[in-house]
Length: 94
Image 1 (spheres, rainbow, N blue to C red):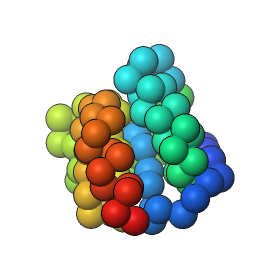
Image 2 (image 1 turned 45 degrees about the horizontal axis):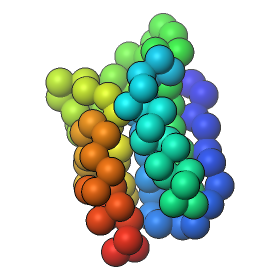
Image 3 (image 1 turned 180 degrees about the horizontal axis):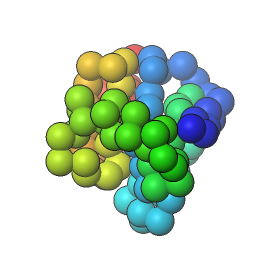
């Protein structure tokens, strides 16, 4: 599984479950980049075989309906969908 990490300001562990073709996933990545935040992501649709099953099992803990993007912060806070104000609000308190 290819997890990509984008360097930036440490605002806790920020992880995105994304799809490579999803415009909202791209907007979320761009927002985090513009905010200068360090984050990691996996494009779930590009993962194959048993590894994709593992990614879906991990994702199901945060997004049982498998909605994209799913942004997980510090393995405890979850934002489903592109919600710019929610993302900014959580990260500004970091």
